Length: 585
Image 1 (spheres, one colour):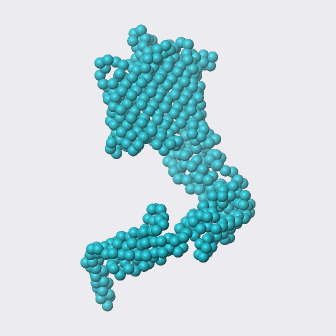
Image 2: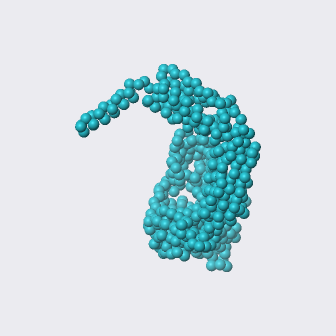
Image 3: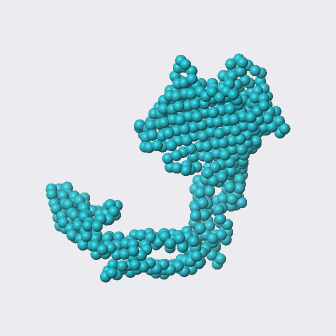
Protein backbone atom coordinates (compact mmCIF):
# COMPACT_ATOMS: atom_id res chain seq x y z
CA UNK A 1 0.00 0.00 0.00
CA UNK A 2 2.84 2.39 0.86
CA UNK A 3 4.53 1.77 -2.51
CA UNK A 4 1.25 2.47 -4.35
CA UNK A 5 0.87 5.73 -2.41
CA UNK A 6 4.38 6.88 -3.37
CA UNK A 7 3.87 5.91 -7.03
CA UNK A 8 0.57 7.80 -7.13
CA UNK A 9 2.17 11.01 -5.77
CA UNK A 10 5.02 10.69 -8.27
CA UNK A 11 2.46 10.26 -11.08
CA UNK A 12 0.60 13.43 -10.06
CA UNK A 13 3.83 15.47 -10.00
CA UNK A 14 4.80 14.24 -13.46
CA UNK A 15 1.37 15.14 -14.86
CA UNK A 16 1.63 18.64 -13.36
CA UNK A 17 5.04 19.23 -14.93
CA UNK A 18 3.81 17.84 -18.22
CA UNK A 19 0.92 20.28 -18.27
CA UNK A 20 3.33 23.15 -17.60
CA UNK A 21 5.57 22.37 -20.53
CA UNK A 22 2.90 21.15 -22.96
CA UNK A 23 0.75 24.28 -22.55
CA UNK A 24 2.01 27.11 -24.76
CA UNK A 25 3.57 30.02 -22.88
CA UNK A 26 0.90 32.70 -22.36
CA UNK A 27 0.83 35.94 -20.50
CA UNK A 28 -1.46 38.85 -19.73
CA UNK A 29 -0.93 42.60 -19.99
CA UNK A 30 -3.07 44.98 -17.95
CA UNK A 31 -3.89 48.62 -18.72
CA UNK A 32 -6.25 51.15 -17.12
CA UNK A 33 -7.98 54.05 -18.82
CA UNK A 34 -9.50 56.71 -16.56
CA UNK A 35 -11.69 59.66 -17.46
CA UNK A 36 -10.08 61.54 -14.55
CA UNK A 37 -6.51 60.36 -14.26
CA UNK A 38 -4.59 59.88 -11.07
CA UNK A 39 -0.84 60.44 -11.13
CA UNK A 40 1.24 57.95 -13.09
CA UNK A 41 2.83 56.73 -9.87
CA UNK A 42 -0.58 56.13 -8.26
CA UNK A 43 -1.83 54.35 -11.37
CA UNK A 44 1.26 52.14 -11.43
CA UNK A 45 0.73 51.20 -7.78
CA UNK A 46 -2.92 50.27 -8.42
CA UNK A 47 -2.09 48.06 -11.42
CA UNK A 48 0.69 46.24 -9.57
CA UNK A 49 -1.73 45.33 -6.75
CA UNK A 50 -4.25 43.64 -9.04
CA UNK A 51 -4.35 39.85 -8.77
CA UNK A 52 -4.42 39.63 -12.57
CA UNK A 53 -1.17 41.58 -12.78
CA UNK A 54 0.50 39.46 -10.12
CA UNK A 55 -0.47 36.20 -11.93
CA UNK A 56 0.14 37.55 -15.44
CA UNK A 57 2.98 35.07 -16.12
CA UNK A 58 1.48 32.05 -14.36
CA UNK A 59 1.95 28.80 -16.34
CA UNK A 60 -1.66 27.88 -15.48
CA UNK A 61 -3.13 31.05 -16.99
CA UNK A 62 -5.96 30.22 -19.42
CA UNK A 63 -9.11 31.94 -20.67
CA UNK A 64 -11.26 30.78 -17.73
CA UNK A 65 -8.64 31.84 -15.21
CA UNK A 66 -8.29 35.27 -16.86
CA UNK A 67 -12.07 35.75 -16.81
CA UNK A 68 -12.20 35.06 -13.08
CA UNK A 69 -9.26 37.37 -12.34
CA UNK A 70 -10.53 40.27 -14.44
CA UNK A 71 -13.93 40.19 -12.68
CA UNK A 72 -12.17 39.99 -9.35
CA UNK A 73 -10.11 42.97 -10.46
CA UNK A 74 -13.21 45.19 -10.62
CA UNK A 75 -13.81 44.71 -6.88
CA UNK A 76 -10.10 45.16 -6.19
CA UNK A 77 -10.09 48.45 -8.12
CA UNK A 78 -13.16 49.74 -6.28
CA UNK A 79 -11.46 49.01 -2.96
CA UNK A 80 -8.21 50.67 -4.02
CA UNK A 81 -9.93 53.76 -5.45
CA UNK A 82 -11.60 54.28 -2.09
CA UNK A 83 -8.19 54.89 -0.53
CA UNK A 84 -7.89 57.88 -2.90
CA UNK A 85 -11.36 59.19 -2.04
CA UNK A 86 -13.35 57.78 -4.98
CA UNK A 87 -16.14 55.64 -3.56
CA UNK A 88 -18.39 55.21 -6.63
CA UNK A 89 -16.22 54.63 -9.69
CA UNK A 90 -17.80 53.18 -12.83
CA UNK A 91 -15.58 50.37 -14.11
CA UNK A 92 -15.85 48.26 -17.25
CA UNK A 93 -13.44 45.65 -18.47
CA UNK A 94 -12.61 44.22 -21.87
CA UNK A 95 -10.10 41.62 -22.95
CA UNK A 96 -8.62 40.31 -26.17
CA UNK A 97 -6.54 37.27 -26.93
CA UNK A 98 -3.90 36.90 -29.61
CA UNK A 99 -1.44 34.02 -29.98
CA UNK A 100 -2.30 32.85 -26.50
CA UNK A 101 -1.57 36.26 -24.91
CA UNK A 102 -4.31 38.20 -23.16
CA UNK A 103 -4.69 41.96 -23.10
CA UNK A 104 -7.03 43.26 -20.40
CA UNK A 105 -8.18 46.88 -20.28
CA UNK A 106 -10.14 48.53 -17.48
CA UNK A 107 -12.00 51.72 -18.36
CA UNK A 108 -12.71 53.79 -15.29
CA UNK A 109 -14.87 56.80 -14.64
CA UNK A 110 -13.82 57.80 -11.13
CA UNK A 111 -16.95 59.81 -10.46
CA UNK A 112 -17.09 62.61 -7.88
CA UNK A 113 -14.54 62.40 -5.05
CA UNK A 114 -15.41 62.38 -1.38
CA UNK A 115 -14.19 65.59 0.19
CA UNK A 116 -13.38 66.34 3.80
CA UNK A 117 -16.10 68.36 5.49
CA UNK A 118 -14.79 68.54 9.04
CA UNK A 119 -11.69 67.50 10.99
CA UNK A 120 -12.09 67.13 14.75
CA UNK A 121 -8.80 66.48 16.58
CA UNK A 122 -8.96 66.32 20.37
CA UNK A 123 -5.80 66.16 22.50
CA UNK A 124 -5.93 65.26 26.17
CA UNK A 125 -3.26 64.54 28.77
CA UNK A 126 0.05 66.20 29.61
CA UNK A 127 0.94 66.52 25.93
CA UNK A 128 -1.89 68.93 25.10
CA UNK A 129 0.62 71.81 25.24
CA UNK A 130 3.62 69.96 23.79
CA UNK A 131 4.91 72.08 20.90
CA UNK A 132 5.78 69.05 18.77
CA UNK A 133 2.31 67.51 19.18
CA UNK A 134 0.66 70.85 18.45
CA UNK A 135 2.85 71.13 15.35
CA UNK A 136 1.63 67.67 14.27
CA UNK A 137 -1.97 68.82 14.59
CA UNK A 138 -1.22 72.03 12.71
CA UNK A 139 0.32 70.08 9.83
CA UNK A 140 -2.40 67.39 9.68
CA UNK A 141 -2.53 66.64 5.90
CA UNK A 142 -6.35 66.65 5.54
CA UNK A 143 -8.43 69.77 5.95
CA UNK A 144 -11.96 70.79 4.87
CA UNK A 145 -12.27 70.82 1.11
CA UNK A 146 -9.47 68.31 0.47
CA UNK A 147 -10.15 65.08 -1.39
CA UNK A 148 -10.23 62.29 1.19
CA UNK A 149 -7.05 60.22 1.17
CA UNK A 150 -6.91 57.19 3.43
CA UNK A 151 -3.18 56.91 2.83
CA UNK A 152 -2.54 60.42 4.14
CA UNK A 153 -4.77 59.68 7.10
CA UNK A 154 -2.92 56.47 7.97
CA UNK A 155 0.46 58.14 7.51
CA UNK A 156 -0.58 60.94 9.88
CA UNK A 157 -1.70 58.37 12.45
CA UNK A 158 1.61 56.48 12.19
CA UNK A 159 3.55 59.72 12.54
CA UNK A 160 1.59 60.60 15.66
CA UNK A 161 2.20 57.23 17.29
CA UNK A 162 5.92 57.50 16.53
CA UNK A 163 6.01 61.07 17.84
CA UNK A 164 4.34 60.06 21.10
CA UNK A 165 6.74 57.16 21.55
CA UNK A 166 9.82 59.23 20.70
CA UNK A 167 8.83 61.97 23.14
CA UNK A 168 8.21 59.61 26.03
CA UNK A 169 4.39 59.35 26.14
CA UNK A 170 4.54 55.61 26.63
CA UNK A 171 1.01 55.24 28.05
CA UNK A 172 -0.70 57.24 25.29
CA UNK A 173 -3.99 55.87 23.91
CA UNK A 174 -6.02 56.56 20.80
CA UNK A 175 -9.57 57.02 22.11
CA UNK A 176 -11.25 57.55 18.75
CA UNK A 177 -9.92 57.51 15.21
CA UNK A 178 -12.43 57.12 12.41
CA UNK A 179 -13.58 58.47 9.09
CA UNK A 180 -17.34 58.86 8.63
CA UNK A 181 -18.29 58.95 4.93
CA UNK A 182 -21.68 60.18 3.71
CA UNK A 183 -22.16 58.87 0.17
CA UNK A 184 -25.28 60.97 -0.33
CA UNK A 185 -23.33 64.20 0.03
CA UNK A 186 -19.87 62.78 -0.82
CA UNK A 187 -18.51 64.31 2.36
CA UNK A 188 -16.37 62.87 5.13
CA UNK A 189 -15.91 63.78 8.78
CA UNK A 190 -12.64 62.86 10.50
CA UNK A 191 -12.64 62.25 14.22
CA UNK A 192 -9.31 61.92 15.97
CA UNK A 193 -9.09 61.84 19.74
CA UNK A 194 -6.19 60.68 21.88
CA UNK A 195 -4.91 60.92 25.42
CA UNK A 196 -1.14 61.39 25.62
CA UNK A 197 -0.98 60.43 29.27
CA UNK A 198 2.02 61.62 31.29
CA UNK A 199 5.45 62.12 29.77
CA UNK A 200 8.20 59.88 31.09
CA UNK A 201 11.73 60.83 32.18
CA UNK A 202 15.23 59.46 31.83
CA UNK A 203 16.22 57.26 34.75
CA UNK A 204 19.53 55.66 35.64
CA UNK A 205 21.85 54.61 32.82
CA UNK A 206 23.40 51.15 33.16
CA UNK A 207 26.35 49.91 31.09
CA UNK A 208 26.98 46.28 30.26
CA UNK A 209 30.78 46.27 29.78
CA UNK A 210 33.97 45.58 31.71
CA UNK A 211 36.70 47.88 30.36
CA UNK A 212 35.86 51.50 31.19
CA UNK A 213 35.18 53.54 34.31
CA UNK A 214 31.60 54.77 34.67
CA UNK A 215 32.88 58.33 35.07
CA UNK A 216 34.43 58.16 31.60
CA UNK A 217 31.32 56.66 29.98
CA UNK A 218 29.06 59.24 31.62
CA UNK A 219 30.89 61.96 29.65
CA UNK A 220 29.14 60.69 26.53
CA UNK A 221 25.64 61.23 27.96
CA UNK A 222 23.59 63.93 26.20
CA UNK A 223 20.92 63.72 28.91
CA UNK A 224 20.77 63.51 32.70
CA UNK A 225 18.62 61.57 35.12
CA UNK A 226 15.25 63.26 35.62
CA UNK A 227 15.31 64.96 32.20
CA UNK A 228 12.25 64.55 29.95
CA UNK A 229 12.62 61.51 27.72
CA UNK A 230 13.36 62.01 24.02
CA UNK A 231 14.45 59.26 21.63
CA UNK A 232 16.65 61.73 19.71
CA UNK A 233 18.94 61.91 22.74
CA UNK A 234 19.42 58.13 22.63
CA UNK A 235 20.30 58.45 18.94
CA UNK A 236 22.83 61.14 19.84
CA UNK A 237 24.29 58.88 22.53
CA UNK A 238 24.72 56.09 19.99
CA UNK A 239 26.38 58.51 17.58
CA UNK A 240 28.83 59.76 20.22
CA UNK A 241 29.87 56.28 21.34
CA UNK A 242 30.35 55.16 17.74
CA UNK A 243 32.40 58.24 16.79
CA UNK A 244 34.85 57.59 19.62
CA UNK A 245 36.20 54.57 17.68
CA UNK A 246 36.39 52.71 21.00
CA UNK A 247 33.48 50.33 20.46
CA UNK A 248 32.79 47.65 17.88
CA UNK A 249 29.05 47.66 18.60
CA UNK A 250 26.65 49.78 20.64
CA UNK A 251 23.14 48.74 21.73
CA UNK A 252 20.90 51.16 23.63
CA UNK A 253 17.58 50.03 25.11
CA UNK A 254 15.08 52.07 27.17
CA UNK A 255 13.58 49.68 29.74
CA UNK A 256 10.05 51.11 29.65
CA UNK A 257 8.52 48.21 31.59
CA UNK A 258 10.91 48.95 34.46
CA UNK A 259 9.90 52.61 34.85
CA UNK A 260 9.49 53.57 38.53
CA UNK A 261 6.74 55.51 40.29
CA UNK A 262 8.37 58.77 39.20
CA UNK A 263 8.01 57.64 35.56
CA UNK A 264 11.79 57.43 35.20
CA UNK A 265 12.86 54.94 32.52
CA UNK A 266 16.18 53.13 33.09
CA UNK A 267 18.48 52.99 30.06
CA UNK A 268 20.64 49.93 29.37
CA UNK A 269 23.68 50.30 27.10
CA UNK A 270 25.57 47.21 25.93
CA UNK A 271 29.10 47.95 24.67
CA UNK A 272 31.45 45.65 22.78
CA UNK A 273 34.99 47.13 22.68
CA UNK A 274 37.30 47.11 19.71
CA UNK A 275 40.55 45.17 19.84
CA UNK A 276 43.05 46.66 22.27
CA UNK A 277 45.86 46.93 19.70
CA UNK A 278 45.39 48.80 16.42
CA UNK A 279 47.96 48.50 13.64
CA UNK A 280 48.05 50.49 10.41
CA UNK A 281 50.38 50.42 7.42
CA UNK A 282 50.55 52.77 4.46
CA UNK A 283 52.51 53.08 1.25
CA UNK A 284 52.68 55.48 -1.64
CA UNK A 285 54.87 56.97 -4.31
CA UNK A 286 55.51 60.47 -5.62
CA UNK A 287 58.10 61.76 -8.02
CA UNK A 288 59.27 64.31 -5.44
CA UNK A 289 59.71 62.05 -2.42
CA UNK A 290 60.07 58.65 -4.05
CA UNK A 291 58.70 55.58 -2.34
CA UNK A 292 56.96 56.36 0.95
CA UNK A 293 55.95 54.06 3.76
CA UNK A 294 54.19 54.63 7.05
CA UNK A 295 53.32 52.54 10.08
CA UNK A 296 51.50 53.21 13.31
CA UNK A 297 50.56 51.24 16.38
CA UNK A 298 48.07 52.28 19.07
CA UNK A 299 47.17 50.65 22.34
CA UNK A 300 43.57 51.40 23.19
CA UNK A 301 42.33 51.28 26.78
CA UNK A 302 45.76 52.06 28.21
CA UNK A 303 43.72 53.14 31.22
CA UNK A 304 40.07 52.61 32.12
CA UNK A 305 39.41 56.28 31.34
CA UNK A 306 40.08 55.88 27.63
CA UNK A 307 43.74 56.95 27.49
CA UNK A 308 45.76 55.70 24.52
CA UNK A 309 49.47 55.35 23.80
CA UNK A 310 51.01 54.92 20.37
CA UNK A 311 53.95 55.19 18.04
CA UNK A 312 54.24 56.15 14.38
CA UNK A 313 56.81 56.49 11.64
CA UNK A 314 56.99 57.84 8.10
CA UNK A 315 59.87 57.05 5.78
CA UNK A 316 60.62 58.33 2.28
CA UNK A 317 63.77 58.94 0.24
CA UNK A 318 64.01 62.56 1.40
CA UNK A 319 62.27 62.55 4.78
CA UNK A 320 62.17 60.31 7.84
CA UNK A 321 59.96 60.91 10.85
CA UNK A 322 59.26 58.85 13.99
CA UNK A 323 57.52 59.56 17.25
CA UNK A 324 55.60 58.35 20.28
CA UNK A 325 52.37 59.88 21.55
CA UNK A 326 49.92 59.79 24.44
CA UNK A 327 46.25 60.75 24.04
CA UNK A 328 43.79 61.73 26.78
CA UNK A 329 40.07 62.12 25.96
CA UNK A 330 38.66 65.52 26.92
CA UNK A 331 35.28 66.41 28.40
CA UNK A 332 33.65 65.55 25.03
CA UNK A 333 35.56 62.32 24.36
CA UNK A 334 33.83 61.54 21.06
CA UNK A 335 35.47 64.57 19.41
CA UNK A 336 37.88 66.36 21.76
CA UNK A 337 41.21 65.19 23.13
CA UNK A 338 44.64 66.20 24.44
CA UNK A 339 47.73 64.77 22.84
CA UNK A 340 51.42 64.79 23.72
CA UNK A 341 53.97 63.69 21.12
CA UNK A 342 57.73 63.48 21.05
CA UNK A 343 59.13 63.09 17.56
CA UNK A 344 62.31 63.20 15.50
CA UNK A 345 62.50 64.35 11.86
CA UNK A 346 65.30 64.26 9.32
CA UNK A 347 64.82 65.89 5.90
CA UNK A 348 67.40 66.20 3.12
CA UNK A 349 67.00 68.07 -0.17
CA UNK A 350 69.51 69.29 -2.75
CA UNK A 351 70.14 72.57 -0.90
CA UNK A 352 68.99 72.03 2.70
CA UNK A 353 69.17 69.51 5.51
CA UNK A 354 67.57 69.51 8.95
CA UNK A 355 67.32 67.42 12.10
CA UNK A 356 64.40 68.35 14.34
CA UNK A 357 63.45 67.10 17.78
CA UNK A 358 60.06 68.29 19.01
CA UNK A 359 57.92 67.80 22.10
CA UNK A 360 54.40 68.97 21.29
CA UNK A 361 51.34 69.41 23.50
CA UNK A 362 48.10 69.65 21.56
CA UNK A 363 44.47 70.36 22.46
CA UNK A 364 41.82 69.50 19.84
CA UNK A 365 38.20 70.61 20.18
CA UNK A 366 35.25 70.47 17.81
CA UNK A 367 33.26 73.64 17.10
CA UNK A 368 30.27 72.52 15.04
CA UNK A 369 31.71 72.09 11.51
CA UNK A 370 35.16 73.37 12.53
CA UNK A 371 37.90 71.79 14.60
CA UNK A 372 40.13 74.04 16.71
CA UNK A 373 43.71 72.99 17.43
CA UNK A 374 45.84 74.68 20.06
CA UNK A 375 49.42 73.49 20.47
CA UNK A 376 52.66 74.30 22.20
CA UNK A 377 55.86 72.85 20.77
CA UNK A 378 59.36 72.73 22.28
CA UNK A 379 61.73 72.31 19.32
CA UNK A 380 65.44 71.85 18.81
CA UNK A 381 66.52 72.05 15.18
CA UNK A 382 69.92 71.61 13.56
CA UNK A 383 69.82 72.85 9.96
CA UNK A 384 72.11 73.60 7.05
CA UNK A 385 71.47 75.75 3.94
CA UNK A 386 73.79 75.32 0.97
CA UNK A 387 77.43 75.23 2.04
CA UNK A 388 76.85 77.29 5.17
CA UNK A 389 77.84 75.72 8.48
CA UNK A 390 75.18 74.02 10.55
CA UNK A 391 73.00 76.25 12.68
CA UNK A 392 71.33 75.25 15.93
CA UNK A 393 68.01 76.70 17.00
CA UNK A 394 65.80 76.31 20.06
CA UNK A 395 62.17 77.38 19.86
CA UNK A 396 59.03 77.48 21.97
CA UNK A 397 56.24 77.72 19.38
CA UNK A 398 52.59 78.25 20.38
CA UNK A 399 50.02 77.94 17.59
CA UNK A 400 46.30 78.13 16.96
CA UNK A 401 44.59 76.47 13.99
CA UNK A 402 41.12 75.90 12.55
CA UNK A 403 40.36 72.94 10.30
CA UNK A 404 37.33 71.90 8.32
CA UNK A 405 37.49 68.26 7.26
CA UNK A 406 35.27 67.07 4.37
CA UNK A 407 35.23 63.50 5.76
CA UNK A 408 33.01 64.78 8.59
CA UNK A 409 30.25 65.95 6.25
CA UNK A 410 30.05 68.27 3.27
CA UNK A 411 27.69 71.24 3.04
CA UNK A 412 26.68 70.16 -0.46
CA UNK A 413 26.25 66.70 -1.88
CA UNK A 414 28.49 67.39 -4.90
CA UNK A 415 31.04 69.55 -3.09
CA UNK A 416 33.97 68.42 -0.95
CA UNK A 417 36.49 70.78 0.50
CA UNK A 418 39.21 70.73 3.13
CA UNK A 419 40.30 74.04 4.66
CA UNK A 420 43.07 74.68 7.17
CA UNK A 421 44.40 77.89 8.68
CA UNK A 422 47.06 78.36 11.36
CA UNK A 423 48.89 81.21 13.07
CA UNK A 424 52.09 80.43 14.99
CA UNK A 425 55.21 82.11 16.21
CA UNK A 426 58.02 82.40 18.73
CA UNK A 427 59.67 85.10 20.81
CA UNK A 428 63.18 85.59 22.10
CA UNK A 429 61.55 86.71 25.36
CA UNK A 430 59.92 83.27 25.74
CA UNK A 431 62.65 80.61 25.62
CA UNK A 432 63.34 80.98 21.88
CA UNK A 433 66.48 82.02 19.99
CA UNK A 434 64.53 83.80 17.24
CA UNK A 435 61.33 85.86 17.12
CA UNK A 436 58.84 85.44 14.29
CA UNK A 437 55.13 85.31 13.48
CA UNK A 438 53.78 83.14 10.71
CA UNK A 439 50.40 82.50 9.09
CA UNK A 440 49.73 79.50 6.86
CA UNK A 441 46.62 78.27 5.12
CA UNK A 442 45.81 75.55 2.62
CA UNK A 443 42.69 74.23 1.00
CA UNK A 444 41.39 71.71 -1.48
CA UNK A 445 38.08 71.88 -3.31
CA UNK A 446 36.42 69.26 -5.46
CA UNK A 447 33.13 69.98 -7.21
CA UNK A 448 31.25 67.48 -9.35
CA UNK A 449 29.93 69.46 -12.31
CA UNK A 450 28.08 66.54 -13.92
CA UNK A 451 28.21 62.79 -14.25
CA UNK A 452 31.55 62.91 -16.08
CA UNK A 453 33.07 66.32 -15.30
CA UNK A 454 34.74 67.35 -12.02
CA UNK A 455 36.50 70.62 -11.13
CA UNK A 456 39.40 70.49 -8.65
CA UNK A 457 41.14 73.47 -7.09
CA UNK A 458 43.69 73.96 -4.33
CA UNK A 459 45.71 76.72 -2.73
CA UNK A 460 48.60 77.06 -0.29
CA UNK A 461 49.64 80.39 1.22
CA UNK A 462 52.05 81.49 3.92
CA UNK A 463 53.36 84.78 5.33
CA UNK A 464 56.20 85.34 7.79
CA UNK A 465 57.15 88.38 9.84
CA UNK A 466 60.79 88.12 11.01
CA UNK A 467 63.67 90.54 11.48
CA UNK A 468 66.59 88.22 10.58
CA UNK A 469 65.49 85.60 8.05
CA UNK A 470 68.80 83.74 8.26
CA UNK A 471 67.93 82.64 11.81
CA UNK A 472 64.63 81.05 10.76
CA UNK A 473 64.90 77.23 10.85
CA UNK A 474 64.45 75.42 7.53
CA UNK A 475 61.23 73.75 8.78
CA UNK A 476 59.55 77.18 8.88
CA UNK A 477 60.76 78.39 5.47
CA UNK A 478 58.65 78.16 2.32
CA UNK A 479 59.47 76.37 -0.92
CA UNK A 480 57.37 75.73 -4.05
CA UNK A 481 57.44 73.44 -7.04
CA UNK A 482 56.74 69.74 -7.39
CA UNK A 483 53.96 67.15 -7.44
CA UNK A 484 51.65 68.91 -4.97
CA UNK A 485 52.72 72.45 -5.73
CA UNK A 486 53.52 74.00 -9.13
CA UNK A 487 53.83 71.08 -11.53
CA UNK A 488 56.41 71.29 -14.31
CA UNK A 489 59.11 72.28 -11.79
CA UNK A 490 61.31 70.14 -9.58
CA UNK A 491 60.52 69.61 -5.94
CA UNK A 492 61.26 72.79 -3.88
CA UNK A 493 62.99 74.38 -6.88
CA UNK A 494 60.97 77.62 -6.66
CA UNK A 495 62.66 79.67 -3.95
CA UNK A 496 64.87 82.68 -3.39
CA UNK A 497 68.60 81.83 -3.77
CA UNK A 498 71.75 83.01 -2.03
CA UNK A 499 74.92 84.32 -3.69
CA UNK A 500 76.06 80.79 -4.49
CA UNK A 501 72.73 79.93 -6.12
CA UNK A 502 71.50 77.71 -3.26
CA UNK A 503 67.74 77.66 -2.73
CA UNK A 504 67.34 79.06 0.78
CA UNK A 505 63.54 79.28 1.03
CA UNK A 506 61.30 82.32 1.28
CA UNK A 507 59.39 84.31 3.84
CA UNK A 508 56.14 84.02 1.93
CA UNK A 509 54.30 81.51 -0.24
CA UNK A 510 51.52 81.73 -2.83
CA UNK A 511 50.42 78.63 -4.75
CA UNK A 512 47.17 78.02 -6.61
CA UNK A 513 45.89 75.34 -8.97
CA UNK A 514 42.83 74.60 -11.10
CA UNK A 515 42.18 71.25 -12.74
CA UNK A 516 39.35 69.86 -14.87
CA UNK A 517 38.83 66.09 -14.85
CA UNK A 518 36.73 63.99 -17.24
CA UNK A 519 35.69 60.48 -16.17
CA UNK A 520 35.52 58.41 -19.37
CA UNK A 521 35.45 54.95 -17.78
CA UNK A 522 34.33 53.67 -14.38
CA UNK A 523 37.79 53.98 -12.80
CA UNK A 524 39.62 56.21 -15.30
CA UNK A 525 39.76 59.92 -15.98
CA UNK A 526 41.81 62.41 -17.94
CA UNK A 527 42.65 65.92 -16.75
CA UNK A 528 43.98 69.28 -17.81
CA UNK A 529 45.47 71.68 -15.27
CA UNK A 530 47.07 75.06 -14.67
CA UNK A 531 49.31 75.82 -11.64
CA UNK A 532 50.79 79.12 -10.49
CA UNK A 533 52.89 80.13 -7.49
CA UNK A 534 56.24 80.74 -5.87
CA UNK A 535 58.08 81.14 -2.57
CA UNK A 536 59.38 84.68 -2.30
CA UNK A 537 60.56 87.55 -0.14
CA UNK A 538 59.14 91.05 0.08
CA UNK A 539 59.63 92.99 -3.16
CA UNK A 540 59.93 89.94 -5.40
CA UNK A 541 56.55 88.37 -6.05
CA UNK A 542 57.11 86.86 -9.50
CA UNK A 543 54.86 83.81 -9.82
CA UNK A 544 55.89 80.81 -11.90
CA UNK A 545 53.36 78.97 -14.05
CA UNK A 546 52.94 75.36 -15.10
CA UNK A 547 50.34 73.55 -17.20
CA UNK A 548 49.72 70.15 -18.67
CA UNK A 549 47.49 67.11 -18.74
CA UNK A 550 47.22 63.81 -16.92
CA UNK A 551 45.68 60.36 -16.68
CA UNK A 552 44.23 58.92 -13.49
CA UNK A 553 42.93 55.61 -12.12
CA UNK A 554 40.66 56.05 -9.10
CA UNK A 555 39.15 53.39 -6.87
CA UNK A 556 37.30 54.65 -3.78
CA UNK A 557 39.80 57.04 -2.11
CA UNK A 558 42.87 55.46 -3.73
CA UNK A 559 44.24 57.07 -6.85
CA UNK A 560 47.14 56.54 -9.24
CA UNK A 561 47.87 59.60 -11.36
CA UNK A 562 50.41 60.49 -14.03
CA UNK A 563 50.78 64.15 -15.05
CA UNK A 564 52.78 65.50 -17.97
CA UNK A 565 53.61 69.15 -17.17
CA UNK A 566 55.45 72.04 -18.77
CA UNK A 567 57.08 74.96 -16.94
CA UNK A 568 55.72 77.97 -18.82
CA UNK A 569 58.29 80.48 -17.56
CA UNK A 570 61.40 78.65 -18.71
CA UNK A 571 62.21 78.57 -22.43
CA UNK A 572 63.31 75.22 -23.82
CA UNK A 573 62.23 73.57 -20.58
CA UNK A 574 61.49 69.89 -21.27
CA UNK A 575 58.17 68.41 -20.23
CA UNK A 576 58.23 66.79 -16.79
CA UNK A 577 56.44 63.69 -15.50
CA UNK A 578 54.74 63.69 -12.09
CA UNK A 579 53.72 60.25 -10.87
CA UNK A 580 51.52 59.97 -7.74
CA UNK A 581 50.07 57.07 -5.80
CA UNK A 582 48.01 57.86 -2.73
CA UNK A 583 44.65 59.07 -1.41
CA UNK A 584 42.33 61.17 -3.55
CA UNK A 585 40.40 64.11 -2.04
